[in-house]
Length: 422
Image (cartoon, rainbow, N blue to C red):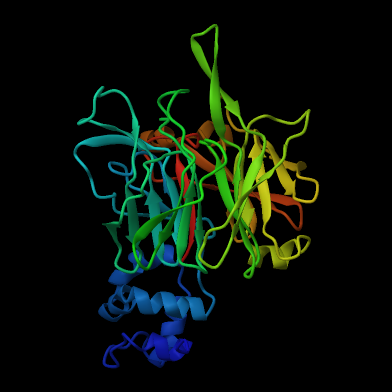
C-alpha cells in the first residue's frame, strides 16, 4: 500500500530543520510540493532546509503524485544531444531548465532521428542515425542501437542495454502497465540526406526491470519513418504503427524517391507485451494525402474528461502542414479537425505535442514578426517561440509566447520532443 502524502513527505525531513517558520513540517512540505518542478533549481538556495527537502527527489515526486501536483512538461532536444543540452520546458509557467548532455562518445557525431519516450521519472533516448569516425566510408551515416536513460531522481544519465538491431526513424511506445518499451521498423536515414538509407522490419521489446531486449514478431513489410502509438484500455491494448516508407524508386534512374505507405499495422498486446500483427487498409483514401504528418495522442485520462467519444480509447491527431486532422477508427480515415490560426514562417515547420489534453503547435518566429522591437543580438539569433494551443473539447485556440534559451532558432524539422509528468 502506498504511503500517505503526509507520511511520505516526512521520510527525508529532519525535524530540527524548519521548512517554513510557524508551520508544521508536514503542512509546509505540502506547500513546497506545489511549486512547479521547473522552478526547483531556482529556489533551492533559499535556505538549507529547502535545499535538503527539494533535493530528496524520490520523496518529493511521490508526494507530488499523491497530492496531484505533478506537471506535464516538455523535453526538447534541439540538436545532437551528445554536444547540445536538452531542455525541460514548462508551458504553464514559461520556465526553462537545462538538462545535462548525454554521455559523449568521441568517435560519433551528428546524432539525429532518434526517439525519446518517458516512463515515470525516467527519460529514454533510443537509437538514431549518426556518423562514426571508425566506419568506412567515413561520410556515410549508420544507425545506432544505443539506449540511454535520464533518471530525474538522481539527475544523471546512464547507458542501458543496446537494442538488438540498430535503427533510427522508427515507431516507439512506452507501456507503463507492463514496464516495457516496444520499437518497430526504422532505418539508417540521416537528416543531412533527403533520401537513401536502409529499412528494417524487426520489432523488439525492452523490459525495464531486467534491462533486456527481446525480439518479437516483425512487421509484415520493411517500414521506416513511421509513427507509433498505443490504443485501447487497461485490459486490451494495441500497438499501432502508421505510415512511413518502404520501397523506393528513382526518377530518370538517378534521383531516389520514397514510396510512402498509406496504411497501418496493429499488434494486439498480450500480457507478455507481444502478439500478432494485422493490417489496416488505406487511411487516406483516393483524394487523401500520401504522406504521414506529425502524430500525437490524447491519452485516456484526458480523453475521458474532455472528449468522451471513443469509449475509453485515446484520440489520435495529425498535423499536416497547417491543418489538424482527427483519426476516425470506425471509418479508418482522417477527418479535418481545425486549422492553425497563425501559419509557420516561410521554409520552417511546426512542432506538435500534447500536454494536459491540449494540442500544442509550436514554431519559431523572429522578434519583428510579433511587432517587437529592440531585441538583443542573442534574442534575435534565437528568435521567439510561439505556442498555439488547441482544446479538442472546446474547439478553441489560445496562444503564448516565450523566449527559448537557445543561441539559434529551433528547427522543428529535426528537433526531438518528449513529454513527461514530474
